[in-house]
Amino acid sequence: MSTVIKNGTIVTADLTYKADVLVDGGVITEIGPDLKGDKELDATGCYVMPGGIDPHVHLEMPFMGTYSSDDFESGTRAGLAGGTTMVVDFCLPNQGESLLDAIKRWDNKSTRANCDYSFHMAVTWWGEQVFNDMKTVIEDRGINTFKHFLAYKGALMVNDDELFASFNRLSELGGIAMVHAENGDVVAEMTAKLLAEGNTGPEAHAYSRPSQVEGEATNRAIMIADMAGVPLYVVHTSCEEAHEAIRRARMQGKRVWGEPLIQHLTLDESEYFHPDWDHAARRVMSPPFRNKKHQDSLWAGLQSGSLSVVATDHCAFTTEQKRYGVGNFSQIPNGTGGLEDRMPMLWTQGVATGRLTPNEFVAVTSTNIAKILNCYPKKGAVLVGADADLVVWDPEKEKTISADSQQSAIDYNVFEGHKVKGLPRYTLTRGQVAVNDGAIQTQEGHGKFVAREANTTVNKALSTWKELTAPRPVERTGIPATGV
Ligand code: DUC
Ligand code: ZN
Ligand code: ZN
Ligand code: ZN
Image (cartoon, rainbow, N blue to C red; front, side, top):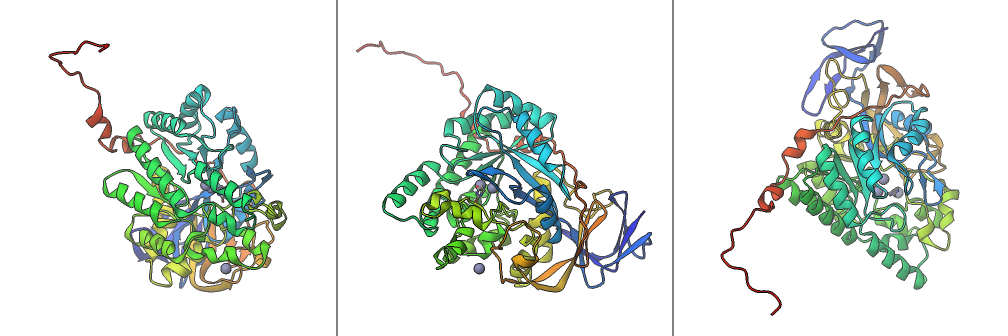
């Protein structure tokens, strides 16, 4: 049965034009005027855009002594409600666990997804097994992105020798390196000092991770990636120091991308000074919210193209889970939600304010990341043959964000009370209508894994560092005697 989206304006990363879109068998089969289908969706007054891709989510993730509370079912339902049609989750191997066993665990959890999804692999430990598994993960499982934590010392953190070894291996295999860039040693020192001085509240979380720890780690990761010759994707870029490093690297022709989160773009550090402990703790995430100067830097990066993608790092914990950290901020599970609100919040604060064009909105919420992850134009495009992952976006539709009406499984929302204008009228996941004019009609298990091949051509266009410093023999005319 075919579906036609009638009378809308198609908005892609580079074009805006009026046309109908015909969808059949889960893909786009025709784009043009006056199309007919078995079923019609009216897009009058709406934009027809590629569905959002959130490349940074943690669903049902074991973390800080608990599990994040949105799973693949509630998380993808929340995504679809807000116009997001694909998510990418991080597969986290235990210490000593093979990467392939970890993927099996993630395969089991993700069978419940309502929309398509993919995985990044996390390199949480280093050894011969990981070195060998990486090839199978890329070539047989279609996972070409590998995340490294430079923070969470004693748990997920890798040291620089491991980082360099892993980056070199990825360079060989055509993978992309990702980093959570915060200096974990400095964070651990600052945390211990703050606690020893009696600073136990959630605001101390922000003091324990100033922007310099992020700037330092981002610079370090960029330099190590350059020496290894691997493209680098920096997750949750939250401050000017990190943005500056990314901007400079890009100007030098390095393949480096930065990913601000909707939370950092729209919420600031004053949230941690709220008199209500729960309010502040619910907003504890890493990196923490920053001040206006950093927010302006992130918006400027999206406008100029030095930052490429807006994500959420959706990692939702209930108030009860957040209270594990009463009396010790370092025990507050790190993470905030955002999957349902990313697109409406970015439209409201980005497009409606004139900071971003509708085309730039599509680029940073969908198309750019589809290209980086190597799943374009299956995803991130309105083109014949592309998956019919589409959002029919009503720029006049309004709501006030509230936990009472959200899809997420948690009991609060960090955007509570924020008014948004610009919401989905329809969201389609491979042609199936999941959001129908406000009604949620998701289907558990509809989502499929999206395999992504290595992109070996990207690697070849990297910095010339290797060539310039490759050892070459030197003819010596004299060698002094030793032992003097
Ligand atoms: N930061 C968070 O806030 N939560 C999950 C992991 C991370 O890096
Ligand atoms: Zn992170
Ligand atoms: Zn994350
Ligand atoms: Zn607020």
